[in-house]
Length: 124
Image 1: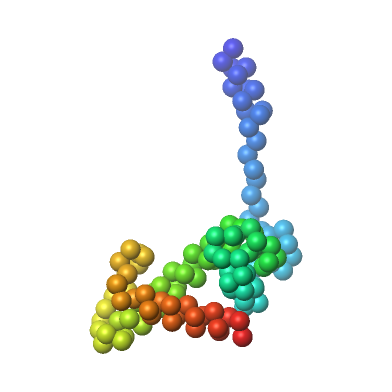
Image 2: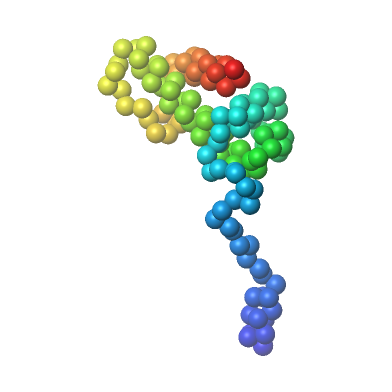
C-alpha cells in the first residue's frame, strides 16, 4: 500500500527542467545599454513595483530578471551615494557598508542626486 502511494506521488510530481542556456538567440546574461535604457524608462513610467509591465516594456527580460536588475541598480546607486556623502564630509577612509540598513541619515540627498544623474545618463 505504501509503495503504491509513493509511486502515485512520484508520477504526479514533475520537476521542471531548467536549461542553462537561453532559449532566445542572442540573449545575454548581461544587460545591454539599450535594455538598461528601456528598463529605466519603464521604471519611470510604471514605477518600481509594476514588474510585469516593466518586463513587457523591456521585451527581452522576464519579471524576475527585471526585479534582480532593479535591486542591483538601487544597491549600486546607494553605494555611490554613500561614497559621495563620505567625500563631501571629507572622510576619505570611510568604509562603505555592504547592507542597506547602515545608511547614514545625511545620505538621502546624495542618493537623490545620484539617482537623478543615473536616470539622466540612461535616457540620453
